Amino acid sequence: MITFPNAKINLGLNITEKRPDGYHNLETIFYPVPVEDALEIVPITHDAAHKVELHQSGLTIAGEPESNLVVKAYRMLDAEFQLPPTAIHLFKYIPSGAGLGGGSADAAFMLKALNEQYCLQLSDEALENYAARLGADCAFFIKNQPTYAEGIGNIFSPISLSLESYRIVVVKPDIFVSTRDAFSQIKPHRPAKSLKQIVQQPIHTWKEEMINDFEESVFPQFPAIGEIKDELYRQGALYASMSGSGSSVFALFGKDKPLPTLSFPQNYFIHTATLNPKPL
Image (tube, rainbow, N blue to C red; front, side, top):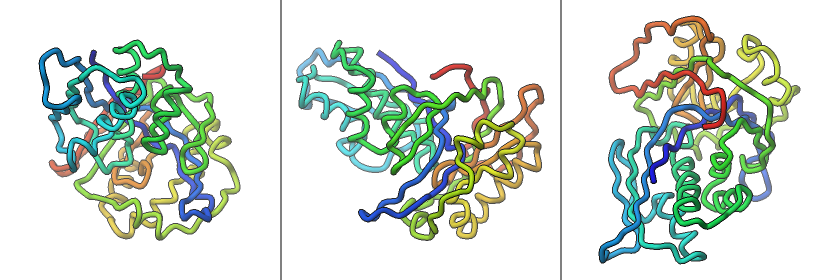
């Protein structure tokens, strides 16, 4: 079977406190967007040297196949359900190191595909528990709906939010941002107004009130990322922000207006789409 793991964006991101374990608590809103990889799983019917095979194409993924989250997802369920030998074909389009959750999406969609392919009859709640073991935001992609996230990005509550028919532009420069370094320069604080409140306001108010705390530390280090955000606003974006700890920047444009002509360097990843009316 074949499935299409999609990316997410962060609508705002506030780092609220540093925890005793060294991690940080935060609040953010995950929203699914139609920037997609392709993931296919095929039962292996011939004698194979390995129980799971990963065939990867598209954008390059660093690391060995065994360290890929889709393989880890297979291994996790195989340990409990003794899955048949399986070949995994993964085409990467979502760029890595972009704050778009591409690896997490692949892992979650892998769990869902294995559940369906091999009739494991796991509930969404069970799948979320497995996904959480693979990464803090992996569980979001099980239900794949607008979600308010707290804790380290792993405590979820659904929110009523539709950006149906708004146009989105995602731009990722050829820049790697270390999440560890981005966190190291953050000064945690509790905002006066929660993102839950802000996101229910008209979109044109988000520019002044909805922020991503990582921008304060990332933009001085990598001015080109901040320049992307500035340019998107110059071109008429209603709201623009870095996603996660970067390095991608997204912008929302009005429903009824055509997208402007965007001019960025050729080595930048640029994707435009219309947001979907329902979960992907």
